[in-house]
Figure (cartoon, one colour):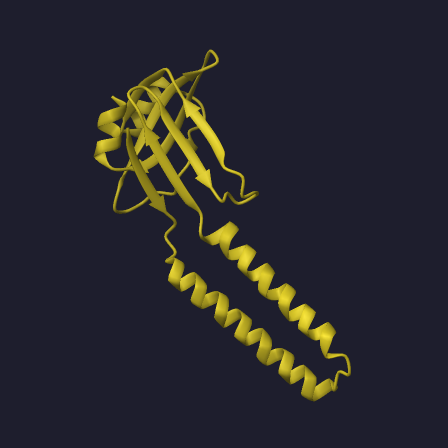
Length: 155
């Protein structure tokens, strides 16, 4: 079985730097508000700062650092979306009965007249492949970016 990992276009180190920068800016704003408004209760402001830091970290993990993993076997393509946008539970989509794998969108439209679902944003470094498959009697199609090794294994 061949595995290929595709990470989101944002560098994780950059995301952590942004997180610390956001926390730093919030801390500066908190300090300015302490000077201007002379808050007596520092605990409330510390709790707000902590909640903002936790929220910003959750936002980065769920929206920015999305990873997608492909597992390819002889006749199945399994796409796992880790840390999806709505939930951190792994969503599993299994495809069987693959009819064709092609790089040509027009050829894909010949097999499948409906909407093509896209699991991965187009990647400039990798080619976009279209997979037409039969699922519970209906013909469906997806698009994904992957290396040529993945497409060769699917054929």
